[in-house]
Figure 1: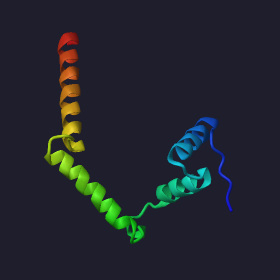
Figure 2: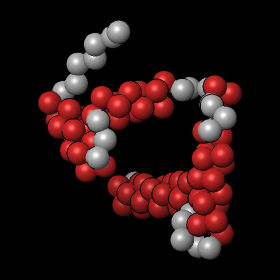
Figure 3: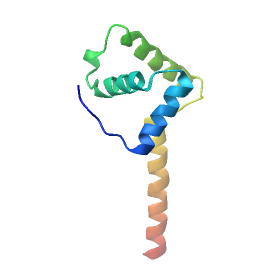
Figure 4: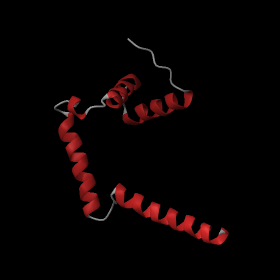
Length: 94
């Protein structure tokens, strides 16, 4: 057994979440830690693979329906906006 010390704010959030969902706080924390420590997709259980695939499909469906954007598209937009702002500052000070 291992003891993990949480900040009071983190513990309060997890207890609130567990209460809201009708879960035991220890079971919730165990599940969260297990999920966080699964770094390798090859370590997913047979039950988790369909859930992950379904989440990916939902995300792609949302992008295709125009409800969400790809991160790469958003990053390119932010970069263009930021670089444009920096160029304007350079022109004003140069």
